[in-house]
Length: 522
Image (tube, rainbow, N blue to C red):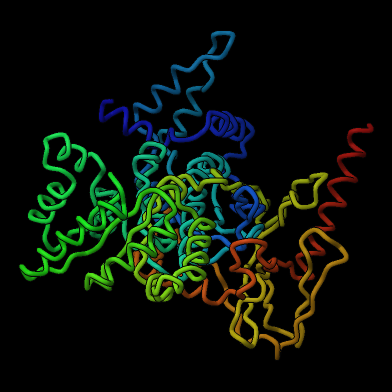
């Protein structure tokens, strides 16, 4: 692929065709410069076969901002659009619209608010808010969803893996199983979600991390084919990497060959003044093999070498391995807590693809239009109350109880100050009968979650380093109730509407149904 082709596919044409045809319609109607607001949110947590997440980790904002800041319609893009024809053979895009794109087809008019990366987020809360001219705000929809949905999905999966590992070390090993270049976004998201390192060399370099890895079975197979055996392969590897020696021990027989040969090599390294790193298990009953490997390594005087587990791991498999170790290790004279602390989890396919839930249902909905200087709220009607977006310009607040645990996310009108008054009424977004009242003394603090990122095309937010993003995640997860953090059947976190926002939503729904049904009847 040519460099120019790559620039085209990553540039402003990285959008769907219908975004451009709608933009031309807005231009033809004189609505293309009308200021509007779109909200980006997801409707439900990821569901992984028989279990569901209780929270998500926001990710991808920096990549979106970088793309917006560097993207515009180039001459080559305009030429391609000029060449497009409809089924009758006529041009799809007119010259005056293309001239508009050539001069104003950028995101200089866009203002962007967002919840920072690494923060815990929940359904039906605006993760990203876009304000700006209708045409370019519409064109932004597809790339925004592409860059934010996937990274949020993978960051969430990584956070669940860390939760299952009881705070243990998770490594991202998914490059070979990822969807093309998306692997780089996946690596970044995995690190935001809690993976400590990655095998992805290029992405690790960009992220300021040291890439990590061991070796493949092929290294041992080659040595065996040349008559040097598994031990010879291990010795050669240790000679070259004496301070980074981590050996894959299941090519032949883990307990009869791999671990004994690894111990021989480790003893030789120790005599030479080096500290071996550990072993990797890539098959079999990994709980049982971990216990036996730990016992053999302990008996040989290597109680602190790590044991890396890989092979189709996910959060439930890790949870099951740890549970089995807790139950079985004592009967073999192995301290289960010490063993669990030395485990490292190399997770590939099931992290990078978010196994069980390959897509986050993030959407981008029009919620407000500025007309004659005033903001008018917009509504979309659905037979399903859960699919009716929350309208208008809004604020989002996180409420903490007296234990300093997050107890609810509250959506309000932008003009509201929820700190006024002695009580807060929290309404369920779609169920008239469900509400909750909080008294001021029940709330230890309240914080606004949105930050202004871009103002009229100018970056006004300091994009934080990866370390700060990871700290956001750790702090927010720690502030969740243990029930919300459960891997299976988590407690439902409350996302609520203030009474004024609830009233506005009901009024708009009633007006839309009444006016459109009456119009259809005429």
